[in-house]
Every structure is written in C-alpha cells, then in structure tokens.
Image (cartoon, rainbow, N blue to C red; front, side, top):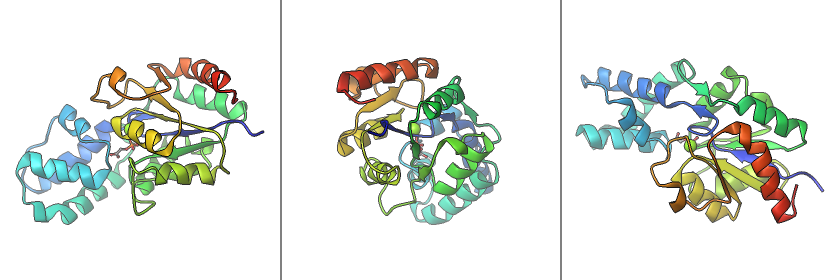
Amino acid sequence: MSRTHLVFDLDGTLVDSAPDIHAAVARMLAGEGKAPLDLATVTSFIGLGLPNLVERVIRHCGMDPSAHPRLVGITLGHYNAASSALTRTYPGVVAALTAFQQAGHQMAVCTNKPVAPARAGLRDLGLEGFFSVVIGGDSLPVAKPDPAPLHACIAGLGGGSTVYVGDSEVDAATALAAVVPFALFTEGYRKTPVADLPHALAFSDFASLPEALAALLRGTGAD
Ligand SMILES: O=C(O)COP(=O)(O)O
Ligand SMILES: [Mg+2]
C-alpha cells in the first residue's frame, strides 16, 4: 500500500506571500492614480484567486468594474515580475516537507494562485523538488472551493488516501467537497474561528505537523 498523499495549499499555508501580492496591487493602483491599500486589507482579499482579489480591490476603491479584465492583467504582470521578493516560507516548512518526503509521502500543491507565479514561487523558495504535481487557480476551468483541482492533484499523484493541508475557509470547503480529511494551519489568512472550520486536525507550527499527521493517520488506519 502506498503512503498517504499530502496536498498543500500555498498562500498562507506554505508561504506568507501577502506582502508581494500587496505590492503588486499597490503598483497597479499607483498606475491608476490611486493610493495603496494597507496590507491587512489586501490579505483579507486573498483566497479565491487573483481575478477575485482584483474584483474586491475594484469594489473597495470604487473603481470602474468594466476595467476588471485590464486590471487583472496589469496586477498579474506586476506580480509575475516580483512574486518572491518579499515572500517567505513559514517556519518549519522545509523541515516538515523533508521529513514527509523521506517518509515516502508523495506531495502536491493545490492553490488558487495562477499556476505560473505558483511554480515560480516554489522554485525561488527552493520548494519545487518536494512536489510532483502543482495545480493553480487557472489550471482547470474551475478553482477551489470546487473539489476538481484537489481531485486533479490526487489523480496526478496516482490516486489513493490523501490529506489536504490549508489555511482558509476556501480550503476547508474544498476538502469537504472532495471528501478528503483537512489539516488546518491556523497562522495563515483565515478569518473564521478555528472551531467554525471543519477540520480533522489543526496546527499552528509546522514542527508539530509530522507527529500530528501520524496520529491522525493511525486513527484512520492509513499511514
Ligand atoms: O491566490 C489566492 O487567492 C489564494 O491562494 P491559495 O489557494 O494558495 O491560498
Ligand atoms: Mg491559502
């Protein structure tokens, strides 16, 4: 029997990417003659992908909704030009991924970030070697919380028992829809209390994830 697969969300789970997303939005707004938004406001817009984030910025700033396609393109251009300048992996991520890889778990990334900057970010931060499958918000016709991207990751890993690790309401809903156990990282971009998000386990420090996951899998009879 192959070991349980592990699929990870990216923004707010493996990496704190909000500062680069915030900077890309600020550059787009500056080009439109607008003042920047604060980091907390932009962070609160992360979760349903870049087009949705730009839609929320447009609404928040009272801009013309018909400019959406153009502003998505401009924001993505700024983000692609500097997607890893300020982004950092959360403490303990590399050690945890190394332990999972050595233990024989196959791993994938399932993110709503567009796949090009997702891959670039994984490469820039030295994480790409951990993941044999990367599905982004524009990889399929649908994005999370539709279960299809998570199912595509699992299929890409060869199918079988899987745990999804994420930080947000969108990730919890995706796991629920896909009928996959959910491990909630509590230090990402979540807005809902932990108790109100369905999860099989919650953790605040990646150093504790390998043991917490092993205990969860023992309980389900998987490994
Ligand atoms: O880019 C987003 O909006 C969210 O990205 P994530 O799915 O990796 O959290
Ligand atoms: Mg996330």
